Length: 388
Image (cartoon, one colour):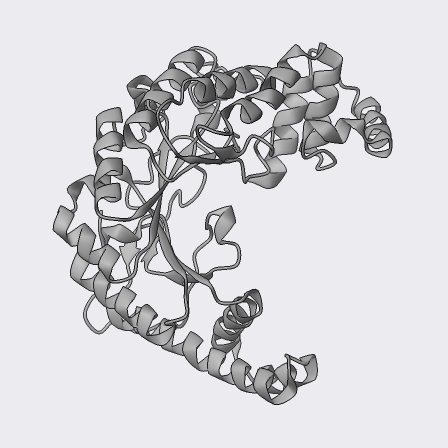
């Protein structure tokens, strides 16, 4: 399963992978591994059919050095012209080939964003040997000592296998945060979607990451248990999070693109998708049962029905519950209007329904779609596919 480039494998130039967390939108993306070492989760459409491999330390250093040289050029332009005039930047880029353009474009975007963070791609950079990852991290910190945060995706099963002293050394070399897809605390749900982890592994790995001093961001997927396992999914996930007390709990409502294996289960009736009101009830149950922890809850993805369900526990718990309770108490047509408004990007919060112009626009689109009780779930599902 794990493939390391053979000795002498040629450097193909600066690389970036296909995804990163939304909150890493302004980070420099450095591709440490290609694709996913597990790649069996039925809800995930990414990397299917692609082989996992690790990039060599030398190749990563070349990527980092290439960005460093571009940053030096951009800093020189900025110092000489009190900013980055387009004409001066074009003078540099006019003669670049495709490889050179790729790294310069990444460096330029990162430079303009303030160069505060770096994200290591793809799905699980901690599968790299600890000694190699430490060498990569040290090179990042040497070239860019001003960076505030270096982060990576990882899997609970990977973290569980890493020696705790190695994990502490990785933290000491400059990795600040890991993003982990917990998805669910229910063993039944985890088995259903072939997550490759159990609740016990999630809890053990989460506690190990925290003991190592890493910030921990756990991703939760409302709706993942479907109708049958919805309540269990919420309650068991809350229990797992209460044991871990991660720094961040990030909500990612389930969407099922046609390229995800779960779509076949959906079409053939083995999986019954939750409606938006059911998901709202599930999130309500989840947050109601988060107790004794100090995590920050984030709803930083367009797939989520409510962007305002955010805050720090325990002080913001009641505030986070308010929009969920308000939505669930609405009459059904008003719920459907909000669902459509949110999925077409007009509404971000329930309060947006008080804006008469926004509401007028949503009502027009609602009528044009011919929304009914019978077709709302299908329409919402189709609209959500635009964001996957």
